[in-house]
Image (cartoon, rainbow over all chains, first blue to last red):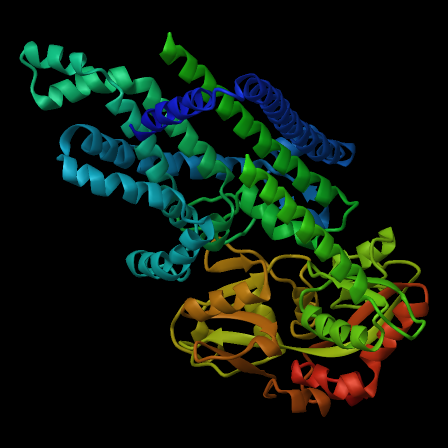
Length: 316
Length: 286
């Protein structure tokens, strides 16, 4: 709401400047044009530099990653569950499966809660409550992940230990709970914006047909905001998949398939960060860690493309 | 646009000022000069940093850059020519479990690093034999009552494979025994700091760490074969879980690198700063 207002003000300020100074009108115009060109080139350069960095990330990670398959077969890397680098076993399937199940578990817990919060904020709560919750969620988005991880380690794990009777408490469930708290504000704030953007006439029409508030929300507002909410969920998912520090602290970091919620496990991100500093530069082990990073890169690219696709459809 | 001009003037002025201070600071009379890069073990990093600080005071023309990662990155960096010195928790010129020897490298002893078995404060056991430790870390002994403690599951905390601490602990405390991963009550951590936190916050946990890290009420060191983990027992030969910390070099060190290693090995540094950092001087060992 604030942004467009500020925009018009600054525009008006810029436009009124030459009028106030009639003597330097042409000179001012020239200078303005020069500045325009300068800034255009500056922005162009920034974008190109960024593209270059992106291309280099893909190139360098990919170049090292591809060396993996000189010594490990595609089938072993993607389908074997045995990750024992010290005995030349490089099966990354367990990390891929763990990453997928951790993300799925996180989304199952996080989506209902965060969409519920978004509905509450956009449709139900009185204005004064909105004014408290929204800034609060914005604050939560900015908290560094290591802080969440530390809270998970010192507060969540002892609690889970009590609850389950396990000795350790580390595992998929602990990681999923920490991730849920991390991505909850992201999903709910963006969904909130999507729901708020639904035109009032939809609701009016729904009420005019005799719907209750619940019916209006679920039959009219949510379907209309659907694509925005899906985009929010995918964005949250990207964050969950790529999250490293918070996960490392509570997942147990043991390269094995998670057979229960409390079994110590390891995902792509946590395994990379745990092992990368202890491997030799020119070893299959190092290459395969790069391959895992490359996989993460591909997954996040795919998800971002999906967001673009979903977002574009909404505009039509 | 006046502020823009002012801003750029300030920026240029400060840049000029900064560059003169940097180039002006390197004044010296002695002729020892060069650049030494030290890479590798985080365990040895505090020692390297302290030594570099003192050494640069004596020889201002020598620039020393030190950084810490895993132990194996030390000899690796030396091999690649990135660093002159690779700090490593084991003798990288010989084979150790998981890592092959680095040919053509010379291991220079610089310190003695003692390690200890630690347990959470909830554990009542205060002595473990090599056989018992082997059983615990291999996953054969899973309850504290089997080694004379309470009827509680043992939670094993270990460093991830490749850690210098793990290499040494396996060799010295477990008699070369394996550390086997388990479905439950098993966790891997990435650094000595994480190890301390994990053992301190997990009831019934057992782990291992550099002796210098042990402090506070939440963790306690366990005796090994009846011998207490202490600096005195390492020096008098009763306590076996320790290793030398090494500076790996490509061939015999020369020039500034040689001078720096000699400084670290000198009596002045070994008996002074090194002892203050809770390492043990190499001369103390026979």
